[in-house]
Amino acid sequence: MSDGLSIRCISGFGFRHFGRGPKYKMEDVTTDRATIDSWKRLFLSRAKLKAASQASALLAGFAMVAMVEVNFSPAEGEQLPPGLIVSFAICTVLLVSFNMLALMISTCILPNVDAIASLNIVSFVKESPHAELRNYIELAWIASTVFGIMFFMIEIGLLCWVQFYHVLVVAAWASTVALIPITLVFIVVAVKFYQALMRHNYFLRESTVQELELLNEQWSNTSFVGPKRKPSLQIV
Image (cartoon, rainbow, N blue to C red; front, side):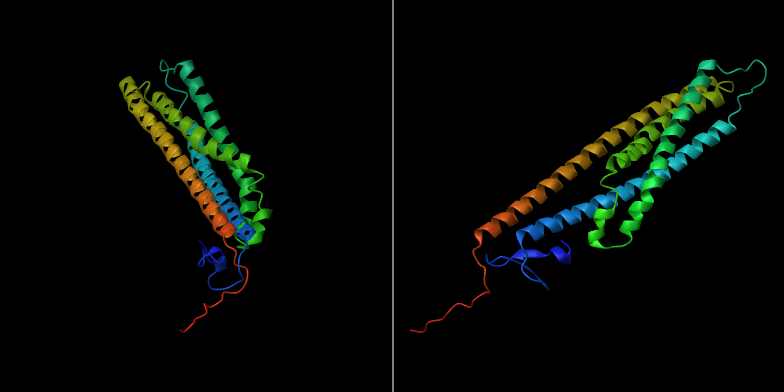
């Protein structure tokens, strides 16, 4: 724990802070723990917003470049199937839209969170909007990392068909066959990562509750309220 929370039980006589300061009360321990959790959520929200902003800008930029560079005016007799063009257009629009949504949310919220985080003043964490806007932060995170990557993988497959349809159809099929297992690997890794993250958060919360229960039990069992007394010695 940090030096503001280095609390121990001394011989059953109550909680003291080593190094400086008076004896802590149980309410102080709970308050400090809540403050630490608030700062952890603030930094986590800021990291999510930064990651969503960077990933969204990259994926949306790729989609726009791909749409501009693709040649939809082939030579006579080499017209692309209408269904393929429509699918590519819809996927590109969805990819750009979801990533622009994540980028807009990140751009609006991130400066306010950064302003509080850069102050390094413990009490100012309550002034950060990350708690009230956590649903928007999660929306930006999901739009960028879930829908953004999903539509990006579909975009790659459709782009291969658009580029190779009149060159070599086998290449288009080969790219699709190679893309399917890669997409499945992405999904499996994402699910496993999410499960591991949930287990980590569960055990972290469980250990925090057990720690607070132990501190509460030790605090309840102590009856020492005055200064520590030296034991009296009797010589017979």
